[in-house]
Amino acid sequence: MEGQLVWKDEYNIGIDIIDKEHERLFKIINKLFRFTDEKSKSQWACQEGIKFFKDHAAKHFTEEEGYMEAVGYERLAAHRHIHQEFRERTLPALEAELEQTDYSADAVGHFLGVCAGWLIGHTLMEDRAIAGKSRSRWMELLSEKEQEEMKEVILQLMYDLFRLEASVISETYGGERFGKGIYHRLVYGTDQEEEKWEIFLVFEEKLLLNTVGKAMGIKTNKLNTILMNAARYTARQFAGCVKEHLPDMEGYELKEENLLTYEEFQDVFEHEKLQVSLLFDTGEGYFAYCVLARRSMKKAGAAPIGSDNALAEVEKYLMKREDHLKKESRLKKKVLVVDDSITIRQGIRKLLADDYDVALAPSGTAAIRCVILDRPDLVLLDYEMPVCDGQQVLEMLRSEEALADIPIIFLTGKTDPETVRRLVALKPDGYLVKCLKPSQIKQKIDDYFERDRSPMR
Image 1 (cartoon, rainbow, N blue to C red):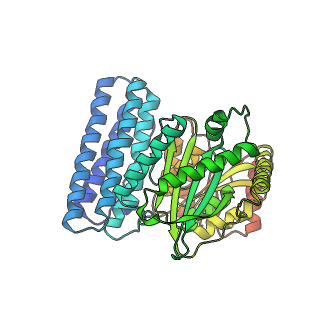
Image 2 (image 1 turned 30 degrees about the horizontal axis):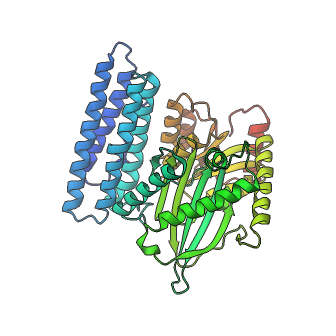
């Protein structure tokens, strides 16, 4: 099992006690990567190595939280919650997988890959924020208590409505696509208050078929108007029940309802900071629940659905969606664009959208989630990202057997010989210089898919 975490200067946040522990955790992960390559080592020894990592991580979390408390760090509660989620949810789930597979090579690889990815992302995003070197993307999230209450409500509703034992996959879902999704937007407001609340419910198609569809006795493998309207009203009741547990939404009523395309939904994550962004695995498909509060409500691209036009709008939405899925399955290759610049991401999406199914990710850690949830045919990966950079993303993907063959082309703004040498040494499937004319970038992507997939220069 190949894998190596390279300690870099940007991992140092400038707080000696934290930097030393981070570097030590990196070394422990690297030792475990090397350790798993030695076939003669026993399962017991592997278990002890993983236990050592867990114990050391827990000790580090406690010390880091102690430092934050001592300096009066304002996001201590949120930071502690992130530690707690990793310690009490992520690690136990990984350990259960290890035990169920009798510590298979794949399960050990999964454990190390997740821990490495989490450690890189957390160090470079949340931990750098302690020293004022970055801003957490999730600054607007509800308090830990409110988040926990909402999760419990949603999990209970899932069980009450559909007898599904769901589990929380992420508390910071970044809008990544999963399967064939339905994107439902509900806007709540009052006649007096200027502020509006938007709730987004995302259902994987098979989840609706296996829950609402079965409850209605509908035997179909695709969505129809009857099923969609039933799903809409189920979703409205679902959102209403959860809304009761948001104190700030007391007295708010439903003002607008829309069915969105994935692009319209993804645009929210490109421009807004959400108060809630939860992703669930129900066992029958994925489900996401997201909440956004704002004063100046952005108009949705989709037409509002009312009692007078519901039938026509739902039918129109399904027809448009079906046409899109057919074209996508027949013609369009999936391209994931990973870049920390919203200008670059949106520019490339606009450039490629007519001929390719384009997904966007603003960071390296978001890219990993995107690849796992919706495997692309090509990744255009920014090499110089400030958080989890292109090299780290490439190395993590290449270390996972199931993802190792996904083509990766670096995006770079530099053309000096040293940068080019470093890029080529990493053996990507090619690289593209961002300063090329848009028509040249488009042509090179077209050539890559249409010809012999020779390395791109």
